[in-house]
Structures are given as C-alpha cells and as structure tokens.
Figure 1 (cartoon, rainbow, N blue to C red):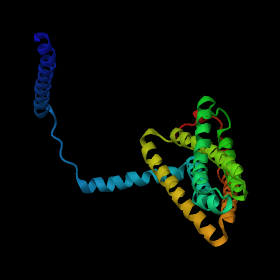
Figure 2 (figure 1 turned 45 degrees about the horizontal axis):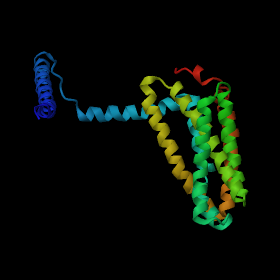
Figure 3 (figure 1 turned 45 degrees about the vertical axis):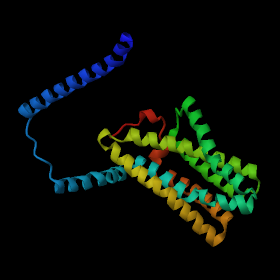
Figure 4 (figure 1 turned 120 degrees about the vertical axis):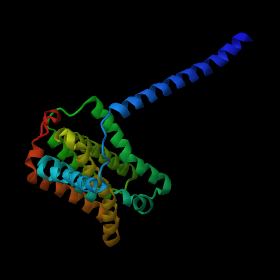
Length: 257
C-alpha cells in the first residue's frame, strides 16, 4: 500500500516541482529582459500597411521579370483553364457513357489514380534531363487525353484517358513547382509561391466555368474537344514565347538570380 501511494503521489510532486521551477526560471528571465533589454517602440500600423502592400506586389514584379517563372506559371494556368473537364463529368456519366452515379465516382477518381501512380514513379525515377521538354510534352499529352476523353463513348477508354490526364498533369506540376522554387531567391520565395497558388487555384474554378459555358453553347463533347485543342495551341505558343523554358535541362542546375 505504501509503495502504491509513492507511485501515485511521486509523479504529482515531480510535476509540481517542475512547474514551480519552470515558473521561477521564466520569471527570472523576464526580469533580466525587462532590465537589460532595449525598449522597442510599437510599430506604426499605417506604415505596415504600405510596406505590406509593396511586399505583396513584389512577387508579381519578380515573376514578370523572370521569363522562365512567368512561362511555367502561365503555361499551367492556361492549360488547366482550357483543358479541364471536371465540370463535364456528370454529363458524360449520365448522357454519354450511361454509368450514372457509380460510374461518375470512378470517373472522378481516375485522374487522382493516374496522378498518384505517376507521383510514386517520379519518386523512384526523377527527371534528370530535358525537364523543360518533359513539361511541355506532358502538357501536350494532357490536351490529347482531354480530346480522347471528349470523343470517347466507351467507359473504360474514358477512365484510361482521365488516368493519363492526371499522370501528365502530375509531371507538369512536379517540374513547375521545382522550377519556381529553384529559380526564386529565399527572400522572395514565399511571395512568388503565393502568387503561383493564387493563379493556379483560380484557373481551376475558371476552367470549370469555361467548360460549362462552352457546353451550354455547343454541347459537352465540343466543349471537351475545344478545350483539348486550346491546350495544344497554348503549348505550341508557349514553346515559341519562352524558349528558355523549353531549353531547361537539369532542374538542379537552375540558379536564383
């Protein structure tokens, strides 16, 4: 019984002793800070607002001054804006493929399955050479997969096209995000990443709006095919506008200016 009391009470006393010791130590440190520490005036909120706005738009200015960063972000933005078919999947499941809710779930999962498989593959076999061409090639494959899905009337072919779409998008995202991180100095990386996330996130929503609007005007199949053709057009145009992006070889050789 005595042993049990010691086992139960000793942790309580040990905890209280540690708490009192930590409190006294912290109080001593606070006294030393108050005595020896410099007196810092509170920051002016109006000055912080101006500086914060300038720091925010500095990320946009940096991207405009770096062609490879601007090309990488805008390529992904327009590719997703034109080639996204997520908003059309319910129409395809019900009216074209005739698979209803269960099939719709598989269609929604197919791009993620392809992206996951490609992510695992990239983890084991990373891109070592011709990274720029790989990115352009995979964005073009994204457009071709979009066209194949748009024209398909076979459920399994549509699943395969969506899986290829997700896998090619994973390669593009891998190259783009690595390139942006490597080409951006430490002091600008957070702001540039914020701008990139803002535009890429907006492109997903705008892409669904574009797909739905074109489908309303011309039908679901023309909407998907036009989007895929638009993605292919963007790839060709961007390869001409940003030759430096096309010539990138090893991602590890990129240096922040």
